[in-house]
Length: 333
Image (cartoon, rainbow, N blue to C red):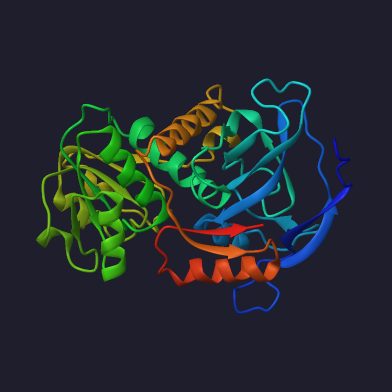
């Protein structure tokens, strides 16, 4: 086996800087990490960029050593820790990892084996890397937070349907439930996208939802600020809302009279707190890979950038912050 290098190239940051700064991300050379007992050392083939990358970039502040961003990854296991039992060197894997460790924007990356799935065999790394964070979030939102099962009926409203997590959630709801899926979109290209994802109907979130829909049983929201009363009006009594954003001064009282249940979904919870069911994320990814290989789901890669460099990743961050992307932006090494 080829000896691994002692250092590796990566893309990091040393301060929270806006995208108009010429060096808000920088190329660095850092020590290659060694795996702990449950860790896999993965050689990265592709990563995807998520809105959380840009949010973390702007809130971490000054760093004594470079902070490496990135969560989604696809790659090959090149070394394993002493306690690893689920994988071995040579396995191709995909995962979203943990927000408590250095990120995937590097040649090599450490990840706990319980958070990892075997990559789907029918797609390449650029498509596999777009899957983990959004499909894990969507799966947990539907099946862990909401009381949704394969036999559940009713109407699911998906706000901002062309985004990464909504794109995954629409597909899962269509493949694994009996829900009627209504997604919101405002541009012709985003409307086409959510229909391709499987939405039964599309409405415009730039217009009052109350004029377009009513009797909603479940709502998924990634932009909740200021919409509490509007959502309450279109939702049925004793319905359910799951959100993944950070609403400003949320008006939770708006949901009281209808006894609407409010659920939070944060994909990193299991990894952050090393919950007893942490390995569920790896199991979910295995199911996602199988559904991809069976043609029941599709990757949501929309744009591929080439090269694990600061220049390439800065382009991706700018595209995310413009707010007009559909699907996922992937960086191929």
